[in-house]
Image 1 (cartoon, rainbow, N blue to C red):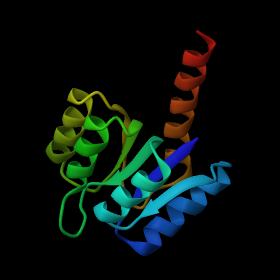
Image 2 (tube, rainbow, N blue to C red; image 1 turned 135 degrees about the vertical axis):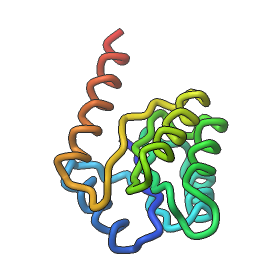
Image 3 (tube, helix red, strand yellow; image 1 turned 60 degrees about the horizontal axis):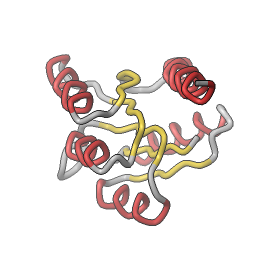
Length: 132
């Protein structure tokens, strides 16, 4: 599995990266900004799962979510946010309208159990698709 983490807090980014490694996911693109995420995607290609913070310095994570969906650079999305429910709902709706599977939303700080549950859901679906 190939995962992009878009998180502008360096500590949160490091923790998420370590959590993914604990799940034996080592193909991780870590980005603190949308520009960094774009550069990583241009160099390394599309991803399976994007883990995106909605609130970033400058552009919002929603801009990156739209871009991932439109360019078909990601299969699925996990939203990170402590935003109000209506903001999260808008992000989920936008992603789904653009054809991106939304695995769920994780509040900060992210727990390993919460992340694991969403990654398991993706793996179950991906394995079922491969079996068909």
